[in-house]
Length: 211
Image 1: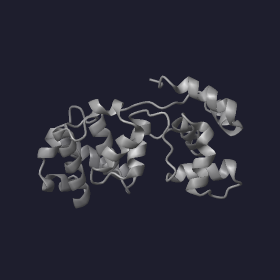
Image 2 (image 1 turned 120 degrees about the vertical axis):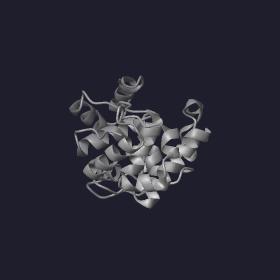
Image 3 (image 1 turned 180 degrees about the horizontal axis):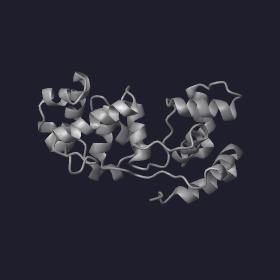
Image 4 (image 1 turned 60 degrees about the horizontal axis):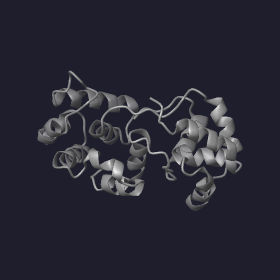
Protein backbone atom coordinates (compact mmCIF):
# COMPACT_ATOMS: atom_id res chain seq x y z
CA UNK A 1 0.00 0.00 0.00
CA UNK A 2 1.24 3.46 -0.90
CA UNK A 3 2.23 5.64 2.09
CA UNK A 4 -0.41 8.24 2.91
CA UNK A 5 2.01 11.09 2.31
CA UNK A 6 3.29 9.89 -1.07
CA UNK A 7 1.11 11.88 -3.47
CA UNK A 8 1.53 15.09 -1.47
CA UNK A 9 5.27 14.49 -1.44
CA UNK A 10 5.59 13.97 -5.18
CA UNK A 11 3.57 17.09 -5.90
CA UNK A 12 5.64 19.19 -3.50
CA UNK A 13 9.00 17.86 -4.73
CA UNK A 14 7.97 18.28 -8.37
CA UNK A 15 7.15 21.94 -7.77
CA UNK A 16 10.46 22.83 -6.18
CA UNK A 17 13.04 20.65 -7.95
CA UNK A 18 13.18 20.15 -11.74
CA UNK A 19 15.39 17.04 -11.45
CA UNK A 20 12.94 15.33 -9.12
CA UNK A 21 10.03 16.50 -11.27
CA UNK A 22 11.56 14.67 -14.24
CA UNK A 23 12.28 11.52 -12.22
CA UNK A 24 8.80 11.44 -10.70
CA UNK A 25 7.29 11.62 -14.17
CA UNK A 26 9.66 8.91 -15.41
CA UNK A 27 8.65 6.46 -12.66
CA UNK A 28 4.95 7.10 -12.08
CA UNK A 29 3.95 3.68 -10.78
CA UNK A 30 6.53 2.94 -8.07
CA UNK A 31 6.44 3.83 -4.39
CA UNK A 32 7.58 2.63 -1.01
CA UNK A 33 5.78 -0.41 0.37
CA UNK A 34 6.21 -2.05 3.76
CA UNK A 35 7.08 -5.77 3.77
CA UNK A 36 7.43 -8.09 6.73
CA UNK A 37 7.41 -7.48 10.47
CA UNK A 38 10.04 -5.41 12.33
CA UNK A 39 12.10 -8.27 13.80
CA UNK A 40 12.23 -10.27 10.58
CA UNK A 41 13.07 -7.20 8.50
CA UNK A 42 16.04 -6.24 10.66
CA UNK A 43 17.22 -9.85 10.98
CA UNK A 44 17.24 -10.17 7.19
CA UNK A 45 19.27 -6.97 6.93
CA UNK A 46 21.87 -8.38 9.33
CA UNK A 47 22.02 -11.73 7.53
CA UNK A 48 22.55 -9.97 4.20
CA UNK A 49 25.34 -7.63 5.26
CA UNK A 50 28.40 -7.81 2.98
CA UNK A 51 27.33 -10.95 1.08
CA UNK A 52 25.55 -11.54 -2.23
CA UNK A 53 21.78 -11.60 -2.48
CA UNK A 54 21.90 -15.28 -3.48
CA UNK A 55 24.07 -16.27 -0.51
CA UNK A 56 21.89 -14.26 1.86
CA UNK A 57 18.74 -16.02 0.63
CA UNK A 58 20.33 -19.45 1.07
CA UNK A 59 21.36 -18.66 4.64
CA UNK A 60 17.97 -17.13 5.38
CA UNK A 61 16.15 -20.26 4.18
CA UNK A 62 18.35 -22.43 6.40
CA UNK A 63 17.76 -20.12 9.36
CA UNK A 64 13.99 -20.21 8.85
CA UNK A 65 14.09 -24.00 8.85
CA UNK A 66 16.38 -24.16 11.89
CA UNK A 67 14.03 -22.05 14.00
CA UNK A 68 10.99 -23.96 12.75
CA UNK A 69 9.63 -21.16 10.63
CA UNK A 70 9.31 -23.28 7.51
CA UNK A 71 5.54 -22.78 7.53
CA UNK A 72 6.04 -19.01 7.38
CA UNK A 73 9.62 -18.27 6.28
CA UNK A 74 8.73 -14.61 5.83
CA UNK A 75 8.26 -14.14 9.58
CA UNK A 76 10.58 -15.30 12.35
CA UNK A 77 9.70 -15.45 16.02
CA UNK A 78 12.14 -13.43 18.13
CA UNK A 79 11.73 -15.60 21.22
CA UNK A 80 12.45 -18.77 19.27
CA UNK A 81 15.51 -17.23 17.60
CA UNK A 82 16.73 -16.06 20.99
CA UNK A 83 16.56 -19.62 22.31
CA UNK A 84 18.44 -21.09 19.35
CA UNK A 85 21.96 -22.24 20.18
CA UNK A 86 24.84 -20.44 18.50
CA UNK A 87 26.20 -23.66 16.90
CA UNK A 88 22.80 -24.14 15.26
CA UNK A 89 22.88 -20.59 13.87
CA UNK A 90 26.44 -21.14 12.66
CA UNK A 91 25.40 -24.29 10.77
CA UNK A 92 22.92 -22.15 8.83
CA UNK A 93 25.89 -20.31 7.37
CA UNK A 94 26.03 -17.32 9.69
CA UNK A 95 29.42 -16.12 10.81
CA UNK A 96 30.00 -16.16 14.54
CA UNK A 97 29.61 -12.40 14.63
CA UNK A 98 26.31 -12.42 12.71
CA UNK A 99 24.98 -15.25 14.85
CA UNK A 100 25.67 -13.14 17.92
CA UNK A 101 24.09 -10.12 16.25
CA UNK A 102 20.87 -12.00 15.44
CA UNK A 103 20.68 -13.34 18.99
CA UNK A 104 21.24 -9.84 20.40
CA UNK A 105 18.51 -8.50 18.14
CA UNK A 106 16.13 -11.19 19.38
CA UNK A 107 17.00 -10.32 22.98
CA UNK A 108 16.15 -6.66 22.37
CA UNK A 109 12.71 -7.59 21.03
CA UNK A 110 11.94 -10.20 23.70
CA UNK A 111 12.90 -7.91 26.58
CA UNK A 112 11.07 -4.94 25.13
CA UNK A 113 14.23 -2.89 24.69
CA UNK A 114 12.99 -2.63 21.11
CA UNK A 115 9.23 -2.24 21.29
CA UNK A 116 7.54 -1.39 17.97
CA UNK A 117 4.46 -0.14 19.82
CA UNK A 118 6.53 2.76 21.15
CA UNK A 119 8.10 3.76 17.85
CA UNK A 120 5.36 6.02 16.47
CA UNK A 121 5.98 8.41 19.39
CA UNK A 122 9.73 8.59 18.67
CA UNK A 123 11.43 11.05 16.35
CA UNK A 124 13.55 9.66 13.53
CA UNK A 125 16.76 10.33 15.44
CA UNK A 126 15.41 8.82 18.65
CA UNK A 127 14.43 5.63 16.85
CA UNK A 128 17.79 5.44 15.11
CA UNK A 129 19.46 5.69 18.51
CA UNK A 130 17.37 2.77 19.78
CA UNK A 131 18.24 0.66 16.76
CA UNK A 132 21.99 1.27 16.72
CA UNK A 133 22.10 0.08 20.32
CA UNK A 134 21.74 -3.42 18.84
CA UNK A 135 24.99 -5.10 17.87
CA UNK A 136 25.36 -5.26 14.11
CA UNK A 137 23.07 -2.32 13.34
CA UNK A 138 24.81 0.83 12.18
CA UNK A 139 23.28 4.11 11.17
CA UNK A 140 22.86 3.14 7.50
CA UNK A 141 20.95 -0.06 8.39
CA UNK A 142 18.78 1.91 10.81
CA UNK A 143 18.04 4.54 8.16
CA UNK A 144 17.09 1.86 5.62
CA UNK A 145 14.73 0.38 8.20
CA UNK A 146 13.11 3.75 8.85
CA UNK A 147 12.61 4.30 5.13
CA UNK A 148 11.50 0.84 4.01
CA UNK A 149 9.69 -0.55 7.04
CA UNK A 150 8.62 2.40 9.16
CA UNK A 151 7.87 4.47 6.04
CA UNK A 152 9.29 7.59 7.67
CA UNK A 153 8.93 10.44 5.19
CA UNK A 154 11.98 12.57 5.93
CA UNK A 155 15.05 10.32 6.25
CA UNK A 156 18.12 11.34 4.25
CA UNK A 157 20.91 8.69 4.23
CA UNK A 158 23.92 10.75 3.17
CA UNK A 159 26.25 7.75 3.66
CA UNK A 160 24.38 5.69 1.08
CA UNK A 161 26.50 5.08 -2.03
CA UNK A 162 23.50 5.25 -4.34
CA UNK A 163 22.40 8.61 -2.98
CA UNK A 164 25.93 9.96 -3.34
CA UNK A 165 26.18 8.73 -6.94
CA UNK A 166 22.76 10.03 -7.97
CA UNK A 167 23.32 13.48 -6.48
CA UNK A 168 26.72 13.68 -8.16
CA UNK A 169 25.16 12.67 -11.48
CA UNK A 170 22.14 14.95 -11.42
CA UNK A 171 23.36 17.98 -9.47
CA UNK A 172 27.14 18.26 -9.74
CA UNK A 173 28.35 17.10 -13.13
CA UNK A 174 29.30 13.65 -11.87
CA UNK A 175 31.51 14.84 -9.00
CA UNK A 176 30.68 13.68 -5.48
CA UNK A 177 29.55 16.29 -2.97
CA UNK A 178 30.53 16.36 0.68
CA UNK A 179 27.99 15.18 3.25
CA UNK A 180 27.49 18.77 4.36
CA UNK A 181 26.86 19.95 0.80
CA UNK A 182 24.40 17.09 0.24
CA UNK A 183 22.47 18.02 3.37
CA UNK A 184 22.32 21.65 2.23
CA UNK A 185 21.10 20.59 -1.21
CA UNK A 186 18.36 18.49 0.40
CA UNK A 187 17.00 21.22 2.68
CA UNK A 188 14.24 22.20 0.21
CA UNK A 189 13.14 18.54 0.02
CA UNK A 190 12.03 18.54 3.66
CA UNK A 191 9.78 17.04 4.98
CA UNK A 192 9.94 14.48 2.16
CA UNK A 193 13.60 13.57 1.87
CA UNK A 194 12.83 9.83 1.94
CA UNK A 195 10.73 10.28 -1.19
CA UNK A 196 13.42 12.32 -2.91
CA UNK A 197 15.91 9.60 -1.99
CA UNK A 198 13.61 6.97 -3.45
CA UNK A 199 13.50 8.69 -6.85
CA UNK A 200 17.24 9.28 -6.84
CA UNK A 201 17.69 5.54 -6.35
CA UNK A 202 15.29 4.84 -9.21
CA UNK A 203 17.41 6.99 -11.51
CA UNK A 204 20.22 4.47 -10.99
CA UNK A 205 18.14 1.30 -10.79
CA UNK A 206 14.51 1.33 -11.94
CA UNK A 207 13.71 -1.86 -10.01
CA UNK A 208 13.06 -1.12 -6.31
CA UNK A 209 15.07 -3.07 -3.75
CA UNK A 210 12.95 -5.01 -1.25
CA UNK A 211 13.86 -5.02 2.45
